[in-house]
Image 1 (tube, one colour):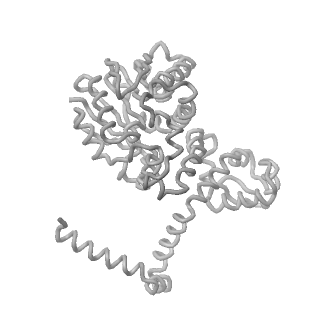
Image 2: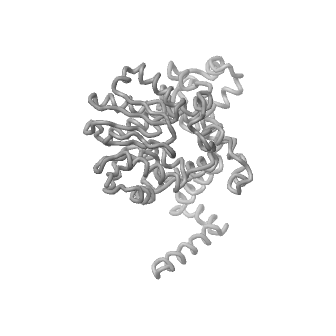
Image 3: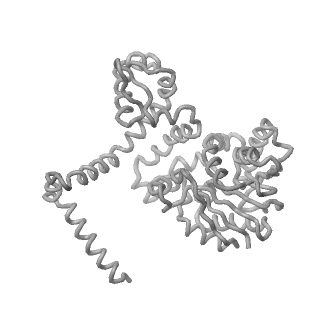
Length: 373
């Protein structure tokens, strides 16, 4: 039941909604010099929401055509860009003008174009670019979001992440795990840096990365902590990919690799810290709880688990409810969760003493620490 304060706020917000919905009020707000900036910002926000898909497609085209790499070498005219990207002059002009409007590139003197600040941040950023190019699958699924919400269509992302619909994910072969494993490996360095900058991993003796993919996080942790022993647990076909990567990094002598299904198989013991990186939000509550309980059984009291993923409601990450909400819908399972919701699951699994660590890029990930009790 709503409190008196909540009822009063509801009435006040209802009045606000009716005013904003009134065309006469909107005309007045635009005409009034005091309210005009607010009205313009609201109209711009609506434009951005309406055109957001086009914006993302412009970014995708720039990344796919390697426009940022071309302009990183030197500013170029439209004719030079057209030649460098194998486009007609009209197409190149359309692309760079669109990119300039989004601050991906910027106009320079002499009719040339150079990188904008956002475009410059993407040069050589394999992690970010891999995610940009991956979005094409999601866009296909979101062509009819109402059908997706009503369960009338199955998302293609479920095929991209084959373990999400498999009754026996441990039997997946190398060809089935290769696409998503490569994507996770390419995008992992950004997440690893955030987590390892926020948490002093060198205080531990053995780290186990559950669902650790190709071992990118383990390799990053090993570089921060030369005495740290490493354990990786993932599907057998993924573990073989990790073996190759860790061997190339000279880390196999420090690493124990285990293949299996973390929903059915016991995790190896001996670690005093476990990481779950972009794992919990891929599962519904019952499955996530089963994973956390499995992790708890592998840890002695006082052992630490780090849940590393984007979390709902964290300052700076507010739009992620929209992104991860629909991404996991298309994927076929999972959901974004608040810190409190993740803590509730951890508590049911046998963890306590929760700490949300400070990290700069909360739009990328958050880091929640808990201890086994």
